[in-house]
Length: 141
Image: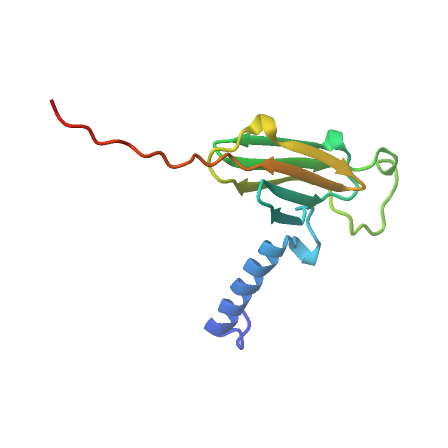
């Protein structure tokens, strides 16, 4: 530990690490492969877009269980790179996972997913809201 580091320096370092982790920055400042997402909402659906450059449909798995959306993918090293002596690589490879909490009552069979030009788009129809029902109070027997 450096003499000028001190307690506040440690605090700043911890803040920096948490900030980098939240931004998906890996060791040495390298960007990890956690996809950036955008979530929008209309009256009828929730729309999720995720940037997945370099991935194809076969590299992505989507599941919904207990109102939790899981997007899993894997970016593999290209086959023609394995026999080369790489001098510098700023590309990231490996498995990623994004987990999002959905509102209760989503029907997984109604979710639609498309992928084009490295952008995954999910359309998640909102569950129908039940109309309030008036309950009549009857005379006890």
